[in-house]
Length: 245
Image (tube, rainbow, N blue to C red; front, top):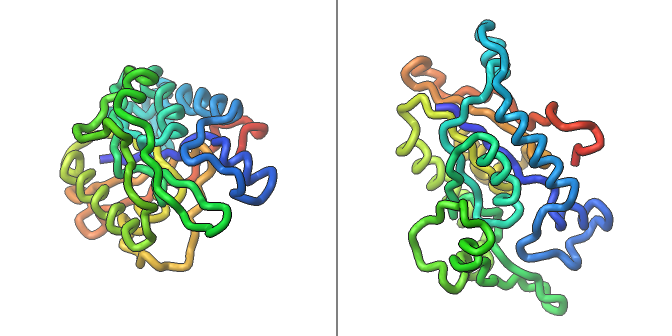
């Protein structure tokens, strides 16, 4: 299996932070900015490009012959869906919503007076169907909102990452599938720690720009002593300099 972890495009909250250095006034579930939508369009074109046939193993490591994705998952958060939909359309792949790919904390707002982080319902099933009819939604009671729980505490995040990794390996681990997931920078840090078997509390931040791509190959049958291969991280060479965020 090849795994391609992709961060969403620039969101309204990303822009707010860039402009103010503060989360004050943040949206609980922001959408993409105009820049974010342009980034998503470039991402879709990059992943859909046919590439050039031939080449050696180094060329293959850089996907010079194309990506040839077989599966596409995304977080249920709006910015991830808005990033993944152009990719799904360009590739002709179904877009499957995977709840556990959401950003750390979930859907919440911060009380101005107490600074308490309070969970919110999130988009309802009917809301998803009306706005994004192409989505393949998971089973479950989302009638009153997909989140509908308290703010996600830090201790639960590494557990969720390991759950995602286990499910990913169960579905695709012993296959030649090429799997892309469109998610978030905070969750990326927890999932990479799980994949690389790093301590959850390791004092390091793994950088991931908007629409950046990280590729990880799982090859236990080919390299039993080194079954996980980190091929590249934070790849944004397909974006114009003016769209780097």
